[in-house]
Image (cartoon, rainbow, N blue to C red; front, side, top):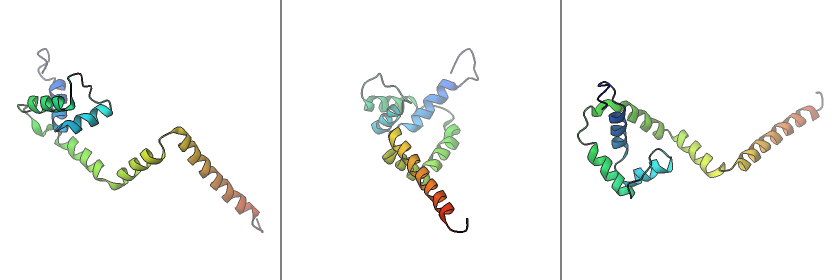
Length: 121
């Protein structure tokens, strides 16, 4: 907490939120890969241990229950998982995205050509 502003709990809140997110070294690795956490302490295990130790005495543990529930709800939706997997597997580079858009454009234009090629139009 900040001594100049007794109602300002930004640091404490952030620390507790990370304490809730980090249980083991794999969690630290995931947060580092997304550039949410910067590790200058050493191994992922050391960071996980530090966050598990400093979060034990925090008051107000239920503050982030709503946020955690919304994150879990988003994660549990299979459509989000499929979309994420499709984007990761098939659209890694801009060239694949442009090729997909080109293929859709060709299919659309082929449909338009077929419509106008029918007799009676």
